[in-house]
Image (cartoon, rainbow, N blue to C red; front, side):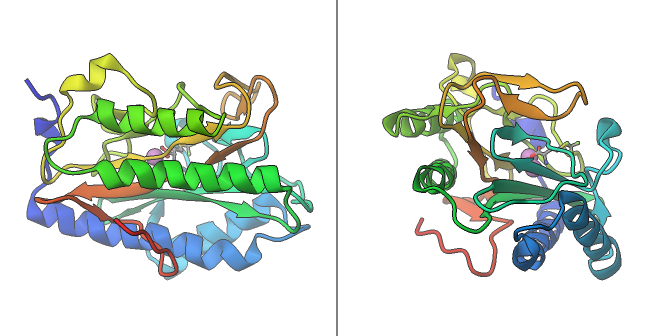
Length: 262
Ligand code: MF3
Ligand code: CO
Ligand code: CO
């Protein structure tokens, strides 16, 4: 029995997912020129918040989600995910993930990317590239009939082939009127339990691999949100919201300047 069947969207719901996805992508397009040395992550949060609310007439899904205090997540260097924007300046050489989720007309669009501040060490540039390619490898596999296990396996193997690791404690997720669909988890490693989660046309979900230069283990800071690598190695993440079509995949959060050869 394929438990993903219950999450298939109607054509009307899919159209709303397209709109929400496009708006989430627009937030990353908007914020890109502001991600520079000496800006604080709090300032980036404010810019995104105001843009989402005032320009996009949408809702920042993260704000107040399970008590999260800000409208975006900003995860710098050895922070894996869920970094809380604060009054601390970005510095030369930082790598930072900005993760944006918007709600428009009741539906969610969820996407993130890495930004590099000034001169970034080649090894950290490489980390970001591998994280993006890991996402693209996963996206390229998406079509009806493929299992979530195969996607996770591909991503984990790709990270390993670059002597990096794929985080196991966080995953992608089904998404729609709910931010995280309950029984629709997209693990970024080989999980035998995902063997029977078979993709079907009309499903919408995220792939969002977190790749570490060191080991995959994470720990949560005392703010109860910020996830960091246990070994303090740098970490990078990219995320897209996807639609399974009859023949393959549609990337709902594709940015204007982003090119993927599927
Ligand atoms: N956007 C994250 C995801 O990709 C979730 C962030 S939840 C928050 O699933 F509360 F930290 F914002
Ligand atoms: Co997500
Ligand atoms: Co996200």
